[in-house]
Image 1 (cartoon, rainbow, N blue to C red):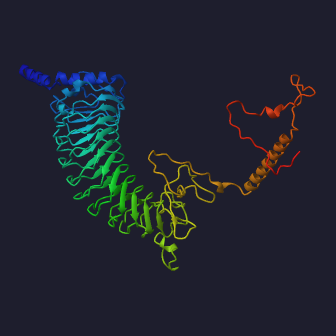
Image 2: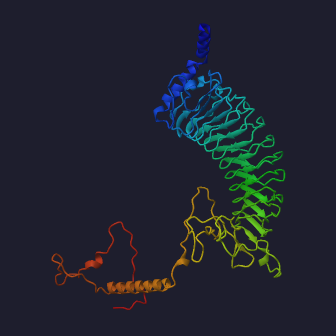
Image 3: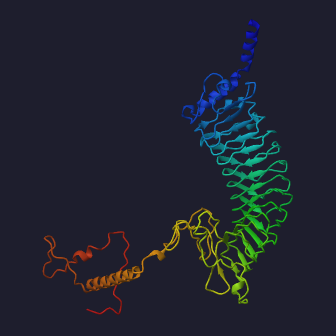
Length: 503
């Protein structure tokens, strides 16, 4: 029995977490205002693995910390250097704390790391180099203040998810050809420059986003990307024609707006799984290609180009079409036979979407409003207008918001600013027009009367105890002159015209 107790005591002593690892956790607690954490159950109590400190995961033998998950836990401050003592760490999740600052820890101190998420904080400085993490599958550093160029990524052969969006990275991209397992790459909202990377050597890629950077040059011809769902590179300085896209059978979102792409649109735009096509504010010319085979296309945005010619057949699932400013026209208004079916028929009668009988039904395809000039379709940004009334006179309160109408060229919306909608005058009562006319007439008569009396000089103020005009003095201007503006104020002087009667 004594021997058994000794064996049990030895095994318990061996199962205790090594002191350097426990001290690393204590340093983290103290450096990031642990008492202010949202949750800190059992922290600083005995062994972290036995007491199950909140967010701490240990190996089966209790000798190593393998995971540390404290997302959105109000950590504030810098990460301590001693955190590198957690050599067996496989997963680190500190996203959404917002108050974590300073430089990133040396990531190569965790060779077993597989999942690393430090997004939505205030980390600054460069990405640590070199990056040699052979097991790393996901690296998420988005929404921080990281700067500088990216280091060599060849030491991340198992990487599947790389998200660096919303930082301040700059410079050209390193080679990505060694990331054969990469499935998602998000570089949006940085300051990257140079050409876009060749994606053909990333056969598993599903999402590529590089919006609002400074990439230049042509769009690389995509090939071998059988799984690519999202291709988005809006707000760059891309030039040249749009390459053929028929080798992207799984593509559902194509967003290349606010670039300098030019030439005619390729015919193979009717991809079977395409949901959203945004080519707005480029330099495209020629006709809009046939999209009848794009059975799942719901949003089409090609405004701000120089497209011309007839509109093709409207895709059956389309619910949003932003076509102007362009020079597209409806064949039905080009003096075709009366029985000819217009390709976009039904898009001019109403600008409301959805059924008034059931608010849960799918919105009706947006409508095109035809202009008074023959051969033109004045189609506009058919986006829901901000601030539109939920219903109008005679409509159900469940009706969908009205769509806005295009009224000429629209400036690119880079800053996200929106214009205020015009007031809806259709809801005013019928007698309001007579009331407004009467008010305008009274204002006109009153203004003319005051103007004439002031010109004749017959409006005087009653003499006060301190303002008595003596005989021979100039007449007092009274309250008329009291209306004169103070020094520095602007004044538009109204003088009588030649047709005004003389005194």
